[in-house]
Structures are given as C-alpha cells and as structure tokens.
Image (tube, rainbow, N blue to C red; front, side, top):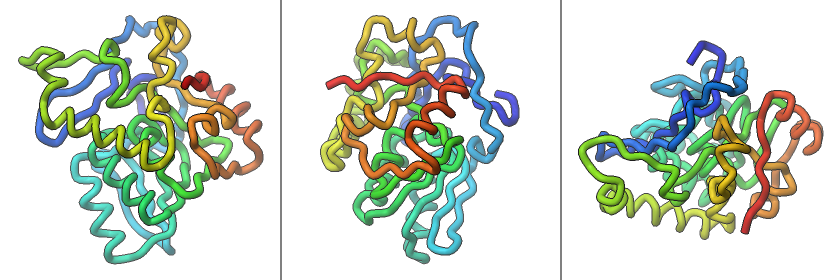
Length: 249
C-alpha cells in the first residue's frame, strides 16, 4: 500500500483478527490484476496504532481498529463525555469495533465519517450512530462480514475451515454480530449482500462495495446527513471508482 492510496481489497485480502488467535479470515479472490485505486489523501486512516483523542465533545479516531481500541475508547469517554465520534478508519478488529459500536448505539452518539469508514468501521460503527454524517469525499465501504458466506473465507494456520468456524471465539463473535444488527434494526446482510450472488467476483473485482442512500434505507440505516445532497455523494463516490451494490432481503 502506497502512502496516500487505499488500494481496493488491501491487496485482495480481508482480515478479521481475533484477540485470542493468530489466525485470520481471508476472503477468496482472483488475481486482482485489474482494479481501480481509491485515493484517500488522509493517510491517518491507516495509522496503526490509531490516534484517538477528544476535543470539544467529539472523540476523534484516526487509524485502524486494533485489539486495544475499545479499552482506549472507553477510558477516554469515561473521563470526558462525548456527543459524537468523528472517524477515519480502514477497519480492523471486529470484536473491538463491535464493542465501540454497542457503546455508540447505547449512548445515542452521532458518527461523522471524515475520509473513510471501511470494513469493521462500516459494518458496525457507522450504522450504530444516531445521526450519521457524510461529506462528498467520505468513503463508506464494505467487503464482507462475520456471518457472510463461508465460501468467501479461507483460513490460514494449522486448522481446517470447519474446525476454525467451530471455535468458541468465532461462534461467539458471529452471535454478537447477529445480535448487534437485531438490536439496531438493520439487516445482517448489509456487510455481505452482493457476496450471496454467483456473479459477485465478476461485478466486484476489487471486492469493495457501497450502497446508495435508497438501498441503505432499505437495509434499515436511517438519519444520514449529507454535506450537500445524497445524490451528490453518490456522484462523487462513483467518480472515485466506488461500485454500488443493491439491497437484498
């Protein structure tokens, strides 16, 4: 990954790293020789460890979601109450993203996407917000989820896919994923809807996808505030090579 460039699929791999295992989920992919690059000037979205601080009632989160992100988040918000989280993140650890998202939802916090909210950020943190804010340059990107099709997953390590998916930690995370979407009233298929189709790899060669405001509403995501208009956000994203998927029930 070159500085300032967020390459689709992060070299065609999607990682969900658990805190108890050194194993990863990797989405199956083709060679990915042909893809469009997504140019994100805000390199802070890739910071690891992330930069997290509070200013004037807003928690600013810049960088990846790691296995210590929730502890840092919780410590800060306990010391300084907030009304909004302003985030720029390419995603990361699903377990910590879920914990942050649960806090956001239970405390009715708003979520502002500055440059990018992708992967675990889009799966959990964005839909958890009471009000969600997108500028014309705010990327909102999915590429699968914990309860997506097993065929899109490859397991590395000395363990079979079946044994890996039967690990208690993985089953717990999958249940928490399902419980979260039920709690917030959003379809669990949000993060993996196009992966259910046989033409997924052909339609989305970079594997990343987003949704139009209309389709987001059908999934159950509401209260999105756009800097200019919903249609202008879609136009801007399409110019930046974002592919839009369709709602599925």
